[in-house]
Image 1: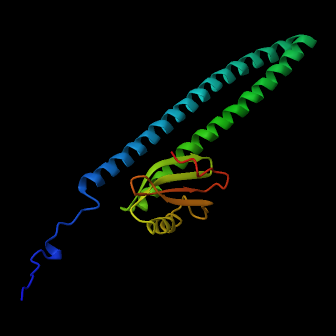
Image 2: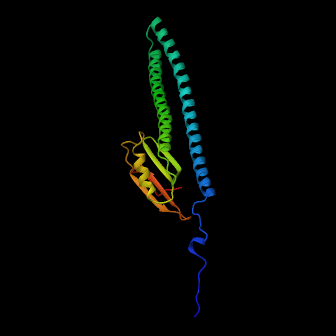
Length: 201
């Protein structure tokens, strides 16, 4: 009678590492470059807003000077229909410029404060099995795109995110998780119901 002995035990078989150090470093590198690109884009936008604000301020000061000069002329002579019309036009233009300046100043302060607060709160809820590839902020609406090692990470991450000051009381309108071509899991989360989550880049 012949006996067969299997000396190739299960524990001796090579194990395939799903997440190697190179893979993790690559993922973190992509995430870092994405965050850096977003930061540079936001900085460029803020610089453009500041430039427009400075231009409007300069124009507003010029209009104020012209308005003051015309006011002095009117006080020293009889009222002229032409000058009165010019004064009305300058006054209206000045008010319009003041309104635009106020809107630009509000947008500037709002954008820099919100984005900085968003990044700080995201850093507090870091998950090793979840990474972001894209962040889009439009006023009060936020859209996240990224990947996860397994699907259960997303609800856990959202629960922790809801505890942060920036997202306290914020409700996420849409969440989608799908498997991509490389057998990985990708997700899209947005706070706006009008956001088209099918448009994943």
